[in-house]
Image (cartoon, rainbow, N blue to C red; front, side, top):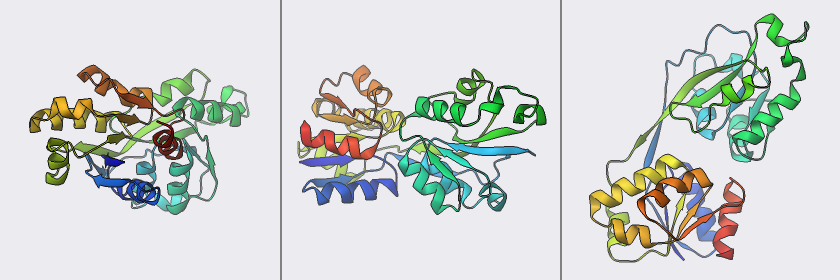
Length: 248
């Protein structure tokens, strides 16, 4: 298949390599740029652990002045890729939920029962978990965990910036009908895809393609714009999405 990958680097290049290894032709056109927030205020603490829902958070914190302090803490990651990025950033104790944000909430709530308010619990000491997040979040993780009496401090450590337009190769491929599908890994990149296609004058052609989405929320902007050939991964991870291509 001739596929367009829209996720930001370095993930886009890695996904493209995996697709090419499976025999696909790939055009990489990142529609988001990820930038670390260098002066992110992590607060005074104490912090009992760290939570991340994206590999971008681990990459952002790798250059933070307080990195050495943070990597000593246990870290809870939403999935395998974010867990790998955390280990690469220097975290030693990493646990993956191997799922989505709801799976992460269940993991954290189950692994830290004394956050429920016992006298010996971390709530009584004023400690909290530190959620290293992006500026734009699909799920309010702190609110979800508050329902389990788990205190969380949310700090934005990176931001994503939408591309203003398609790259020339991506626009040319869409205009010429030289693609068999598009892979979408985030809601914001799907929104950017629709915006860029409209700006390029190829919206109808772009929406007519098969779209392979990491989750239902990722697919929502495409469906709202009129796309009908939408395939949603059974699990919110790259291996499941690549397997969806094979079975579609």
